[in-house]
Image (cartoon, rainbow, N blue to C red; front, top):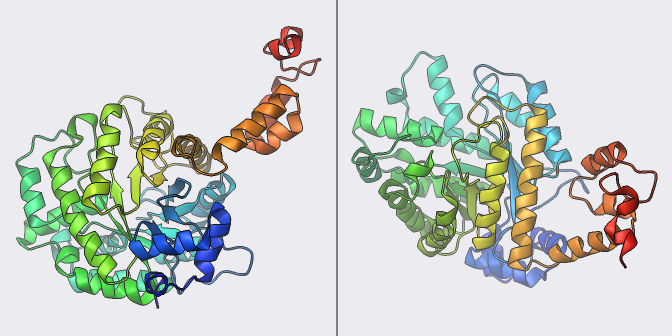
Length: 425
């Protein structure tokens, strides 16, 4: 029985109770959200964790905005130890989920390490493994076997992956729409590009779309959450909210309904690079077309010219998207568009996106969000540095900065003896 089936039978499971406790809401509220598809709890029924370590997370309406961290190898940088350092950095920074996007080295071994060591939900993109295997055997993308892709997805599910990104909305018709567009960056999603090339090379329909019912059977068997990928997300501001993006989103809305009818949990991924004045419209459109399914956004990045600082452009867009109704923010690191992130990039990216998520929680009136800020402000007024550190989003950073700017008085070195809060009660 999947979580959706249990929820529809009005059964409150241990997972729903755990999420309710974490969120400070009633278990019935969570159950109702899982039943109607506005909340998902990514949790593969094969995933085994020792008691006390597993941190279940709910994503969706009425819950805190969550943060995902992408890690993973590339053909130019491989190694289980490197990825473990990134995973530890993501967990230390308190990411709510991680995705293994590895495309280099022993993918199965890396994935096992992530699943064995992550205390939060783990996602991945199964088509990467299928394509990497093809290229290792000297084959071209045209040679990809749809049955092999489905077997890879089931193998990943059997191994314990909690949620998978599948680019089912990149259909033949959507690809035709793309070819008629005047996009600058074309397709920037690897999964989307793989499938578009396969469709064109074989003059056939997207196998993930064509065999969607088989995909749902796999997800139902292992209770894997589907993350319907945005294969045509805009890769620059000029491409945002165009016909290709909207055409794919419309397909994802239909697939969302099919997944719900099969009692499979589903969320929908979104852009991408989006001007700040278009973000709210993008969120509202997704919610409308995809039946209020949880919305998982990459950023969005609000400018294209901030390479080296894209964790900041991501946080700006993420705060706006979260305030408008996005439920899950995928981080971006300072090395986005420049190279594969290192562990310190992962940490910085998670912290920046957690700031965005918290700002969105305040705007959405999430229980406890503003109260935490108020408590810190009271401690700041009292010069209670220990309590401020405890309440800070990044206590370690707080300690480092405080040590650098410690004044001879209670105040910091910004104002010292002239501190306004000391002089004017």
